[in-house]
Image (cartoon, rainbow, N blue to C red; front, side, top):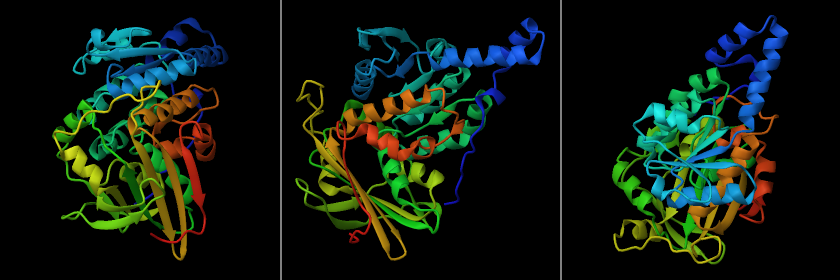
Length: 379
């Protein structure tokens, strides 16, 4: 896939038209205008983090993580009764653009946790951009992530904000790991393999599965293609407790995020067959809290393997509860976006928006156990 790098730029150079008009009316020279504009941007960076879908399973983890870090957070959703009571609450329906923009007013970043993202990502992101906010979501849906990249880049650049779709477990974590491994010298063959000891799906996951009937895509010969059917099956050896697993090809949004900015010749994503069987079984229960943080007992391992010629490198991330671990991923991103040093604009993947090594270091070992092997044996 062709690289689509996003250049760095000064936040000073791109501003809202209404802000420009207001300042021009009240200022007598360009220098004062710039000072006023920078003060406005500083205020926005200090704004709260708005979590849309805060009443859902993942949204509650995100609100909890923001509060744990002492960050200001506002819960936003369609129904006030479902939102966490310990923070400020605002309501906005997904089909009410004006209400969404009002709900995000004064915020610095909007984190969208409300699926299906095929229905919510663009309306929420557009409202966030109009409100002068950065945007993050946790979509695993390829079509949603692709739409954000293709349709929102220009608007985000014009507003001077960053849009980062698919920043959770699916999409974001694999992109971070791949970004540590892929070199620019040669196109790489990338494999993402995921083992879950159980996949207890949330109501949102089941709803998304029903809604998302878009054909899945993989990368072949450097371009996105529809995944050939039937899905490939293989075997992969993970560390304990997962061990040897039978795998099925099942790509998620990591294909879109990785292919967005890394030089990849081929990319395949594999999921343990047992996990796919669980999620397809209507009798599989929803996740139940098993610790004081509300996490389930689910254990995961994600392995990203990169082959460049004869060289094979591998990175692994292990942890607990794929829904809960999305919270520190997106809150870490939001916290960095609020810093004065963050100057990225446009639509971008998690791995191209930040210093990857520093980002991962901030998550380990509290949220993730990480392992990197430079000269690995190919799986």
